[in-house]
Length: 217
Ligand code: DX5
Ligand code: ZN
Image (cartoon, rainbow, N blue to C red; front, side, top):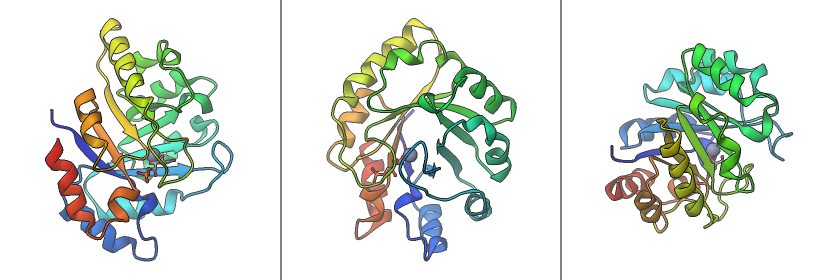
């Protein structure tokens, strides 16, 4: 499959979200990436259920919900009800990530597992078979607009080896600091989904930037 582009709405204009959603709907963007932060797992707070529900009503594209919250199992059902198609949890934030992934699937959503830049790929060994997607963070989570951590490329090949040796099927998503310069290396490395916030929304023509990213895929 050719790679998918998932714009992160963290960098959208919350004073006029409708306009950005309309732009994304008409653009070549594949998914909406929604970053949920609780002020505990990361030193920032973003947005919650009412906003997700409104976004759900305004688009038919896939809602890819990235939970940066402690003990995410407390809220899985509510995120599904709010309209999430994919729910990703951090391995560092959950006491029983394997169980949480099973719960996400039993709710009828796709299950994603996320690791921070400092977390080794090997930590995924016991849970990867419960996941539909692995999200590799290429910045420390909490804020948009940070610089891509190059070591992520090595983690991609390590992850691919694990996927092969475990004979499982998961999509690989990368999130943080992706721009028009480093996207090609990620695509060549075998990433399936590229998340981009600042690169898209801080550009003069976000739809054109999405088009440019998509043309590389
Ligand atoms: C970081 C978030 C990312 C971030 C991506 O905590 O998970 O999704 O918003 O934004 P950029 O592309 O600006 O790094
Ligand atoms: Zn994210």
